[in-house]
Amino acid sequence: MADSPAAASDAPSSTAPSSWSPDSWRTRHAAQQPDWPDADRLDHVLKTLAGYPPLVFAGEARELTRQLGRVANGEAFLLQAGDCAESFESFSANSIRERLKIILQMAIVLTYSAGVPTVKVGRIAGQFAKPRSEGTETVDGVSLPSFRGHMVNDVEFSESARHPDPERLIEAYHQSAATLNLLRAFTKGGFADLTRVHLWTQEFVAASPEAQRYESLAREIDRALRFIRATGIDPDQVPSLHEVDVYTSHEALILGYEEALTRQDSLTGQYYDCSAHMVWIGERTRGLDDAHVEFFRGIANPIGCKVSTKATPEDTVALCETLNPDRIPGRMTLISRMGAEHVRDHLPTLVRAVRDAGHPVVWACDPMHGNTYTSSNGRKTRHFDAILDELRGFFEVHRAEGTWPGGVHIELTGDDVTECLGGAEDLVDDDLALRYETMCDPRLNGRQSLDLAFGVAELLRG
Ligand code: PEP
Ligand code: CO
Image (cartoon, rainbow, N blue to C red):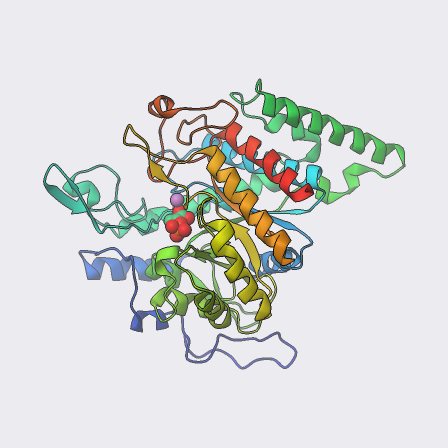
């Protein structure tokens, strides 16, 4: 694998960085990896995966880098959204369609109300692994391995469920493939046609004030399409009105899996992690000398890295230098997740350092992970107002620094769950028990997500 072909003279920086190979991360400290009990079984699974077809193509990942390059230049906005953790159990056409619908609706709100093209990236078709603050969980004196996502083990608190099982990597691959297949069908096969913009509303959202606001926007789009037709342009002949690009992304946590799906692109000689178009490094695994940064350094996909209040300006610039030494716009997205209370104090120093170092990053805001707390009834939750306030702070900082607030990174579901507080329905602590379905972090429901999109559109216009 290390024998990459020599670069053709006209090819863009054609091979992986020197001394990198898809398995060079193995010489480094790899945080947050499961304690797989059976090394031979794991090895066999990884060899099987390495023989399977790639889930995405290098050319698609390159196109996403190009589109994110426009975001880095302040010409487009990134909407990255989806599940905290996808589930092997709630896997159905319905759940995929509902998640896609809400992403499409949010993108319409952002594009139409703010007049900025929206690059759509799902936390979907591979978001199966979770980093945990504690390696074990103790209930009534019994300690078991923590739940690490369906790619590793199961959420139920029992010895057998929590046992890391490498066969789950194969299942994650197949579920990702089926999810991606349906996403491709929905986005290219007529479902995402702009003339169907009215039909994307979920039933439970339909009667709400946010949906009515959305409906009036959809009617304006209809009018605009009629106007275009009246001028003699046939909208049927404009492909971009009938198809959308929705890209896939996940936290590339389990490095054996990601290595097994890494392939060398025959066109450019570069290596791509073909498990998703975009992959990101989590807040807990971004150590500069650690295995995740080493792996990400050599793949040519567009990549993200989370940064919390623990990140210093030096750390952040060093990550950019290591992960994007050629300063390719769109290659690197920094996803800040500081919490509403800290974003205004902490983010400016990072933004200035990266700007002054001349790194063309996409700055995105994850307003979810810094605003999580345990409610009085013991459930992990987030308040809609804190989420919106972190976004407001993020926009304020970028406006003050003269940089582009490039995007948002949201945990949501199309379903009618009650996991986050507040929003138009003003969900309160007692409502959490009604439909609290997440396996990991609390997600915005369809109404809250749409509401948030209108809020972000206002920030973008402001
Ligand atoms: C996540 O995005 O689900 C996550 C675990 O985020 P972070 O790495 O920022 O904590
Ligand atoms: Co999460």
